[in-house]
Amino acid sequence: MISLDRARGGLRPSANIKETLKGRTFTELKDDEKLMVAYKHLEELRQLNGGYIASDYCGDKGGDRYNVFWLRDIMYATYANEYVGAYDKLIESYRLIIRIFQKYRQKITSGARKRTYLGSCADEVIHARVHPVTLEEITNEWGHHQLDIFGLFLYKTGDLIKKGHNVIATDQAETQILLRDIVLYLTTVRWHSDPDFGVWEEGPEVHSSSIGAVLAGLTMWHDDGYYHYKYRARIPIHQYMPVPQGFIEQGRHALEKLLLSESASRPVDLAQLSLVWPYYIISDSQALQVISNVEKRLVREHGVIRYPGDLYFNACASSPAGNEAEWPLGFAWLSIAYSQLAIKALRLGEIFSPPVEYIEKAEHYLRRLESVMTHEGQVPELYTAGRPNYNVPLAWAQSFYVVARQNLNRVHEKLNLR
Image (cartoon, rainbow, N blue to C red; front, top):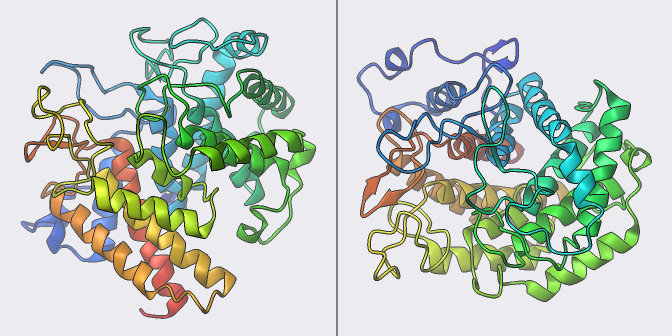
């Protein structure tokens, strides 16, 4: 990957983005300069406690304010830190998520005693959005029962530990109890068959992206060998938190039954790319099918629509088909997905599946992403009728750009093309 200056926390951002640009647009920069500028924009959304506000939009132009914490956004936004070597920042962000879970732990333990669907805003549901300073819940107005948040948390904490970064080192015994409570909660609400509100906070339906996220999290901690190829050392994290094999089998059966659809109402959804990255919880053939479905049905000029008929920021609510908001984040996600296919092929030595085509696709979507970023290197949340909305940059989309660029750098290093 690109060699970068280091400071405490890894990459040292440029002190002045305008100085780096020097009258040039973002697309005119060299690759290492693009990475530096994009990461600096992401850092401007980072708060002192390690969280990331979704964007700096304060709601003054209508709609929800985005200068708050979404738990999912924090976990995805901080992913960029791993790809620039800033592991202390990554760990700090995940420890903030642990603090939030501990703060509302009674909801997890209370929910674990139920045997019925929890609803969108029940007392037993961890809220997806909290205040960036007080960590207090903000609203009950929409669906907070989102199982993928727990799946992402379990997956990445296990991944970090297996890489030698013990995110639960502080107050370890208490955190291990919390992890077990989360597993009990997921088991009780029947994560493999009960509806939730998914990545886009809409529903309730049973979502393949939610099932895949939880399955990946539980598989990571079960340590059945599925993810062994990713790690040099064998760290037996299953000793911290035993996950019964039956949970894994139930999840795999449910995911296979639902694929290739996202839900009963959505044959295809942008969120399904999470099944390829970060989780890679499906087979290679299924990964190619998921990516192909997204490419064929959701790719547009300025980004990727979330799903056909999406009403969020739709240009014409009375005729939603063809007027859906276009998310640049989708270009980044497609680029990452193709890079992951190439990396896995190189790692496992699959000489009969040369990764050249995957690399070309990854480069193609990264270029498309850069073409719809601002001249200063910011990734908008979405475009409606060819114009970006006011969430510029969107934190996790900005992070995905860093991941996409560094993933490609990793592939080229492996192939000795640079």
